[in-house]
Length: 168
Image 1 (cartoon, rainbow, N blue to C red):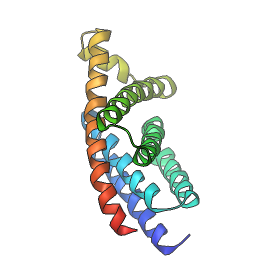
Image 2 (image 1 turned 90 degrees about the vertical axis):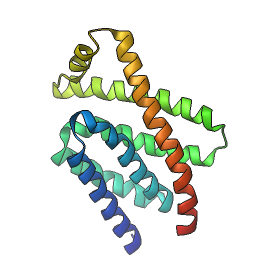
Image 3 (image 1 turned 45 degrees about the vertical axis):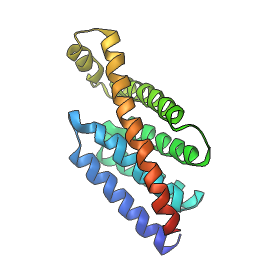
Image 4 (image 1 turned 180 degrees about the vertical axis):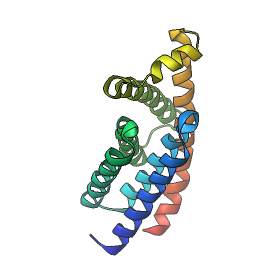
């Protein structure tokens, strides 16, 4: 690995760790923006082997210090890879937002469900209590969250692609 990739990798890991430390609980939605964007930048700038090494290092750090976020970090890695794919294909921006938002909503639900299942947390039950045990309201909540994150990610990668073009 080159010094540039090690440096960017270390900075990326620090940004992600700080994000996980700062954004907990109800403001955890910011992790779903910060972490995929950080990984997206790294994936766009470096080759496959360097990207795999940063992902493995990140997974080890998450397993050691943020075990509750393990399922979410896998979702964020998948989102980052989807963003890289989206930057390569030419689709209407509204179609990209819709597909990304629905995928995010489903990903958030599955992540919470799997975290509850494997770690014994009660996140889904708490969310159901907030929406008065109405599954339709819970679906709307996940869709709104997915739409918000999808719009932010879509417009941010558009700006980042212009900036990254000049960095390479």
